[in-house]
Amino acid sequence: MPADYAFKIIHKYCENCGKELHLRNTRDIKRRRFCSRTCQAQSGIMGNPWDNPITASRMKNAMSKPHTLTERLREAARIRGQKRRGIFRNSEEIICLYCGKSFLLPLSRRDGRIGKNGQPQDRKYCSNECRWLASRKPDELKTDKVLLKQWSLAVLERDNYTCQDCGCQKKRLLQAHHKISKEDNPALTYDTDNGKTLCVYCHAKSHDAHLTNFILSAIHLDLRRPYVTASV
Image (tube, rainbow, N blue to C red; front, side):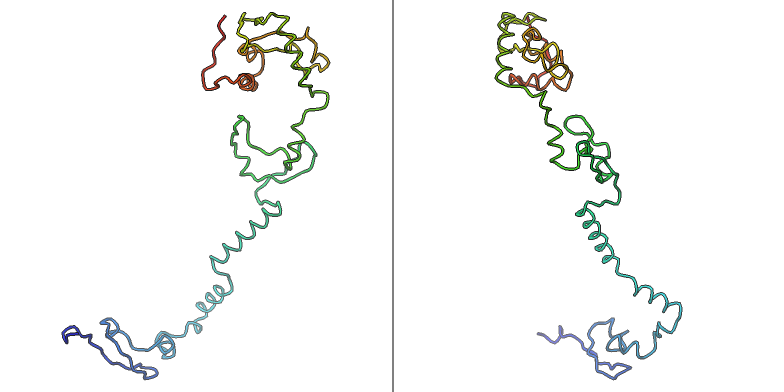
């Protein structure tokens, strides 16, 4: 290396212990007087902070408390443990609609969010088992699919495959409709006098709105198309 580019090293001595310092930084050459912070504290230039009672009490309080990051980690671990045990700080006690058992529901799940069925996404059951058991129909409302199919064919043949409301005669659109629903009178489920032939569009109109898509999808109609009336 050429002599012009050689680093200029200045030798100084620590004012406390006398250790030789090799300095090449301009800032250190001007300001540095000690070899370490220990020597700087021992020299008494900065003073002992423990001698000041106000500073000493503040330092003791800071040393007795955990670090901010440590406190956050402890709080996060505490919340995870509560969730694992089913305990929530901001929660509401809910009674299961099936078994009557009480459980805690976080308030974050009762913020008015709407599900796919258009209903609020609030838990009503304590477990998936209770939800499954509650969704099952009572024995008196269960129907035999074979007998129901025979009843449907009998109603269609009696009405000569013609919709009784609009007169549609397209067989792929015709369905059998219960005049008195199975929920109101299960005994009339397989009575042909309780049925009449309707096209899928008239059938959908005769039921509530939440059954419309179910009725239209029964014959694989495109639900994305707008709702139209059947042509005669």
